Amino acid sequence: MAFERRRRPRAKLTPEIVAKIRERLAMGHYQHDIAADLGVNQGRISEVNTGKR
Image 1 (tube, one colour):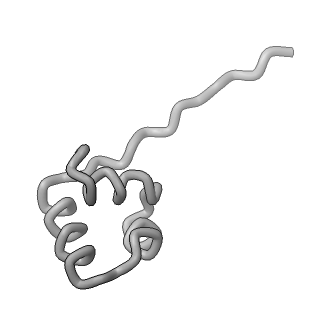
Image 2 (spheres, rainbow, N blue to C red):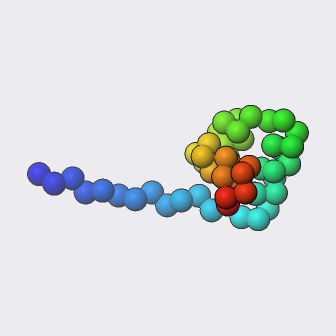
């Protein structure tokens, strides 16, 4: 029996959301707290923090 893989749609990080993420990072909020509030993976927050996204 083959398992069907379903891809989950990625959460879109709009420029407005990225600005809010940067603001919260500047205020000293933890990446995992920001990620939990936005419903995204902490890695996405890290990418914003390091400038990769």
